[in-house]
Amino acid sequence: MTAAHTTITTNSPAIASHTLFVCQTCASVWQDGKRVGESGGQKLLHQIQQLAQDWDLQDEFPIQPVECMSACNRSCVVAFAAKGKLTYLFGDLNVDGSAAAIIECASQYYAKTNGLLPWSERPEPLKRGILAKIPPL
Image: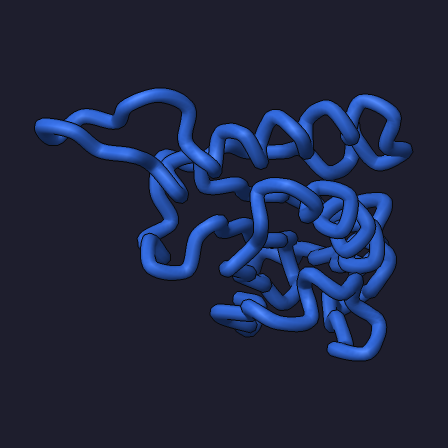
């Protein structure tokens, strides 16, 4: 006799676990091997966190600071990821003026079953600077 099991899968945005990763090391000033002052990534993270306080998806799409996303020559960097969806990595984001576009694009990503973000639908700051579009596991 074999064990029977049922696997239930869904691509419902309400069930998928989403994360907005923000590199907080981006655009750092370094002196003697130590970061000096607040980095551009930290500034961008704080701006995104401020806007997210009024975001209707704040509980479904947590913002996760990352120490380094290894795209130092393309800072500032963010990524959208969710189970069963494409993962996007964006770079070359301006510290000032990108936070609202990142939240808007994250909302679009959340609404897409497969996470596909067509170029024409993305907010202007995220139309360029795409570093990777990674297939889901």
